[in-house]
Length: 412
Ligand SMILES: *Cc1c(COP(=O)(O)O)cnc(C)c1O
Ligand SMILES: [Zn+2]
View: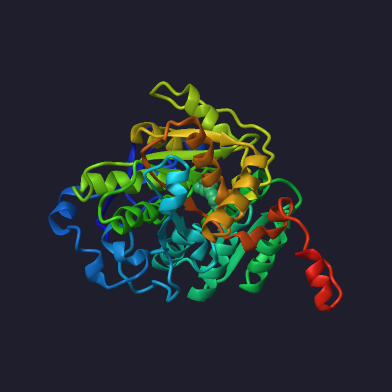
């Protein structure tokens, strides 16, 4: 188990006892006052080395138990979360001017998205804290993920989704047995309602950013990229960004590994936002140190999982990516849809729009030549079957034929 030293506010730096505070800094409020989980680094440095994780024998993110904030393995669900494949595509890399390209397929998690890393951990925290109901608001993946992991743990889940959430994701929630409220309004409306209900009814809230343990689960993707590449992480890592928690998690994971002396070099983390849903990229571009300034916007993109106009982890994302030396890039919906098809045809990995945003960002930067000779990884954060309707916009129809062999010849 990770020896948690405290929870620290990302804005004012106040430190809190994890047994006394569940969500955000009371002084800075839910938006600016998201918390980071800090560990006893000196103790961890003494006990951990590169072999420690493989020695657990676990082919899941729980191989990093020593760096995760749980009391014991008692509540860890049987579902295999994390330790997703990292594929190398050398020919594709060379075609783009890269020295190497790796694709981390997180669509292979139990509920088919990166969110499972966070949900697994937060459901365990709910049980350790003796909470009997979990809740969250989500555009889809966090919700279906929480529903799946609650089902595995035998805990009831109550989920709030905006009415425009894709059908496959809503079906997924209902299949897992969650009670689902489809909120007549935006994701932001659903988010606020879930927080209010959690407070009123005592449910444990997994909504993005407010729960400090989410980023802890999300940092394990960085651990895996480093370990799967034999402790030689790539120069750059691309990830789609909505609320900003996953990109923060990747930065934190690489930073922790570097501070533990497990890697010598930290990859630059590149957050990819959709053009008309890019308040974090905007905040990053004007950031000059000190207080993070940001502006909420309307958000529109085909990539529903990163369609966020009021990002909840913007302060953490901007400070972490700045400290990491990374940056943000924005891509159009056309570039995202093109990336889905290009990725699928070049690698066999089918991503949902938000999952392919990382690849769209890589393609965009690679075209400028700034990545020439570099090694890069893209995190595919969600499976394409979650939103096949989006991909349909870029593919033709099947060829309609009568069941006769001549009909085939006619079309070859
Ligand atoms: C949630 C999500 C993201 C972005 O994560 P944030 O923490 O909201 O920035 C990216 N891709 C997929 C598929 C997601 O579900
Ligand atoms: Zn604070």
